[in-house]
Image 1 (cartoon, one colour):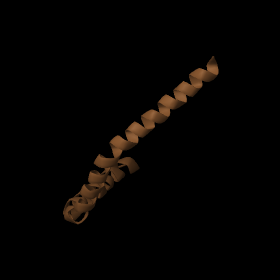
Image 2 (cartoon, one colour; image 1 turned 180 degrees about the vertical axis):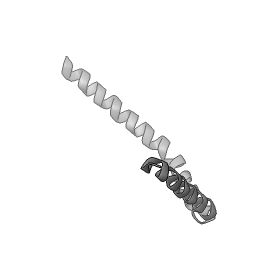
Image 3 (cartoon, helix red, strand yellow; image 1 turned 90 degrees about the horizontal axis):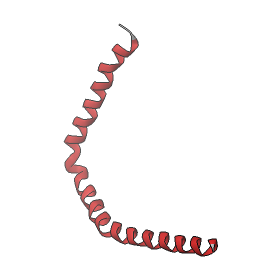
Image 4 (cartoon, helix red, strand yellow; image 1 turned 180 degrees about the horizontal axis):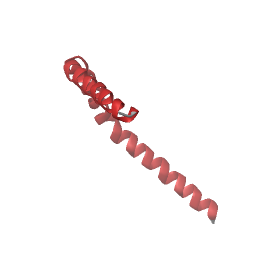
Length: 67
């Protein structure tokens, strides 16, 4: 058996263990994720519009310099 054949079961065991631990710990970190999601839902449209305005202004300045 080569090293790859030996490593695959170990890797899959580690991945399975991490996923199982995350599932068990979900009640502990779920409120934090919900809070981040709420803040992101509030701020992303504001930041998106701000970035769009920055890009429009940059394009206008670029076009004016080209004339």
